[in-house]
Amino acid sequence: MNDLHPFIAGLPKAELHVHHVGSASPRIVSELAARHPDSKVPTDPDALADFFTFTDFAHFIDVYLSVVDLVRTPEDVRLLTFEVARDMARQNIRYAELTVTPFSSTRRGIPEVGFMEAIEDARKAAEAELGVVLRWCFDIPGEAGLESAAETTRLALDLRPEGLVSFGLGGPEVGVGRPQFKPYFDRAIAAGLHSVPHAGETTGPQTVWDALTALRAERIGHGTSSVQDPALLAHLAEHRIALEVCPTSNIATRAVADIDRHPVREMVEAGVLVTINSDDPPMFGTDLNGEYAVAARILGLDELGVAGLAKNAVEASFLDPAGKRKLAAEIDTYTANWLRTPAQ
Image (cartoon, rainbow, N blue to C red):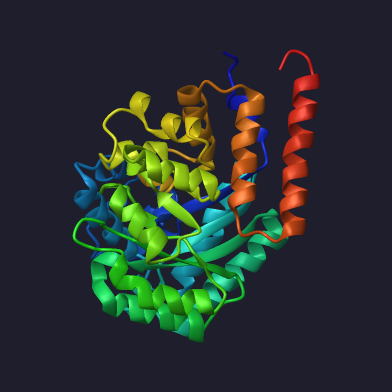
């Protein structure tokens, strides 16, 4: 098989499952930790590698929340958001739906209006200066219970920033049933937001069914256990409900034991619309380019196959129709030019 890394590096891409705070690079994390020395997060970028080695999903959540605690002011929020976009631009990511958890920031004392202004200022600057189009998914942190659901819904609907397109549910799945969040998703959907909950990452396929039936999910975050239920796979394939697959994340959190047996292969064979994403890339020692390379190896793809994955993300995105056509055409043009150029 050809070395696909150079092709992937230049490929125009969209990313649909990537977390705001979880995308903070070691440089930014260490800078924020230095600003807030009472944190347990190391300031030495080298020490962050050990800090970001997880024993299980619960440990990952603990580490993730310790990084969330570093973002304490609107200035921190703005810095983080723009720098995430800068890292995306380096990977030729043209469009990203960034999962933001405003409850985690506002309950720590960041003024809610200041938070919204910070992410919107960074979004506009990223598009103007870097050519990266950002949109927001406001995410309920499930471990914080229904209080966080009510507050996230209020922030999303009462202070709705221009870039907000979807409504999600993250955090641990075990003991955090999806149906209890139905009233909040109903309100968000009625207000025109898309439903994109996490489900089936660390629990079985019933959690995915719950997300589909109770939360009216249009895409599923992870959905790893969907392969355990052929009827569920058939439903996802028939209705073009995309799975936001994050291979390296699943290994890092122990949701999947072995990358070579990742269920993405079964998903694709069942005809499911699969998108490839990085989740919390610096925490997992990866980026979207790396995840495409991993997926290409697991699936045995060539350049056309990888380009197909990129176009899946465009199809499953909430980009406007004209924007979808433009980005899909850019992917096709890049791929055609690459394949007709000898000795890549």
